[in-house]
Amino acid sequence: MRKFMTSLAAVATVTLAAVPALGLLQAAHAAEPTVRIPFGDLDLADPAQAATFKTRVDTQGKALCRQVSGQNMRSNIREADCLAQVRQDVRRQLGAMHRADLRRSAALSSTQVASR
Image 1 (tube, rainbow, N blue to C red):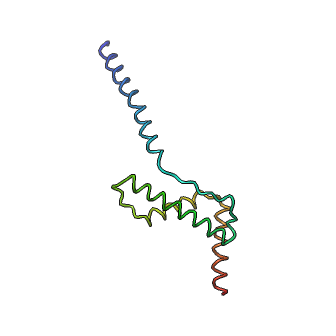
Image 2: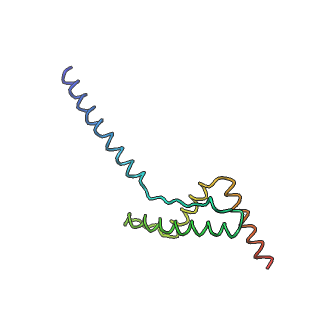
Image 3: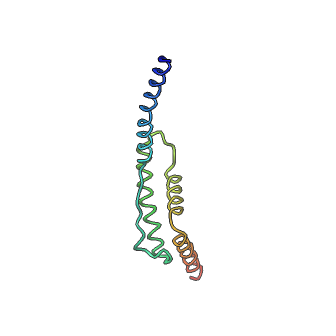
């Protein structure tokens, strides 16, 4: 019985030592590069200001993609694919009202181009 308890204690010690190591790995993974794209100063329903927002997204997205590809030299993600993913993530993180404003501004700008 004593041998069993000693083995159990050893296994418990190894297991407890592994838990912080897993936490460190998760923290390193969670520290992926991110960018903040301000848009509080913009009216996304206005086509000109929506274009400004899209420029901000593209500029920050390209910088982020360069940073990610620089950190992961074995990454074979093309910048265009990375930028498309950034745009999709931004769209997903915007509230429903802001997404609707962007759709409305896109429709307005295409209507304005068609009327010229």
